[in-house]
Length: 429
Image (cartoon, rainbow, N blue to C red):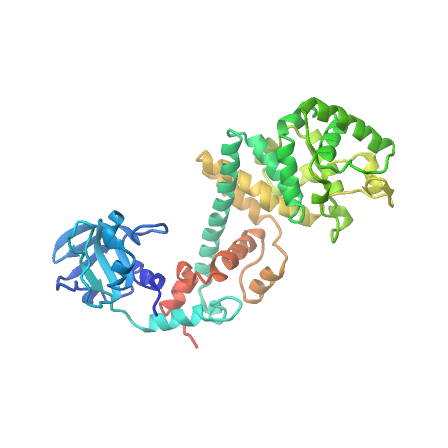
């Protein structure tokens, strides 16, 4: 059976024989504007403009496989559908439909080239890595690059929504929200949740009160993380425990459960103890995380914020409390800096520009992303083999979004690449 989604696609892009669009009751129909597609409940298209036997009609359009689907979906009892001026169907099964007021709804059958459906079904039923894998090499590179730019803005829009959510929760405190996202991203996937919980259990404002003392910041972070529980005492850990004992009593703090933190299958450089020590030094040196991020004029300047921090001497020969190792500097690697650039720097510059109508900041965010090295994973590698551009994070972030949100969900009709193929823009073998 033909999907309603496909029929909506045919109507939206007017891929039907417009000369044969005639109401069941005999009136000729001319589409002046197909309407705006509705992704929520209610009619499929809002604010359409049709000319029916020369008379202008404005209202909504509903699309179904069969005329009787109007009754099956109980639209005749739903006032939300009283504004429908045309019911578009693939098959008229000789049923009269009405609004809640009892008035009849005009109905017309779409007539279109059946090869459109054949091409659509071939992609939707494909078992390839992406539905259009066999044909994507034939798509014009300009169309692809243009679409990747749109995908990137779409993906950044989702990150803006997440930032806006936290801004509402924190009464528009940009510094607090930047601090939360900083900690979340310092978890680098495997420990992102406990780091985020740590940020919410230890507000940035509390850190600021002790900004001049790295020891106090370390005590607060390690103590609230629960990582000072049951550790071997030495001069450093004893000092931290005493400081946290004092501060936790002063602020009535309750630490997180130590078991939340993951050390197994994690490189020592990425142990949460090292990441927290790095955070403590960063927060000690920079009172304004958000301010430091948003003024960065280049990705190199952003990297300098993190690569120049010095940890407490204890961590030069420790990865965890109580166990000495060969002395070495613990610095963020290029991979970690790239991830922070992608997930912290770019979203905050873009979000701040978006919320303050500062177009130059949104442009800067995209330029910053284009300066970051491309993601290196199996998905990007497959895109590379298909000939897609992967020269920077600008492209790879868009391609990751394309695979997850469009290809994996087979939303080919929402993708200009899929649209081009369905319309016959490439030769399907």
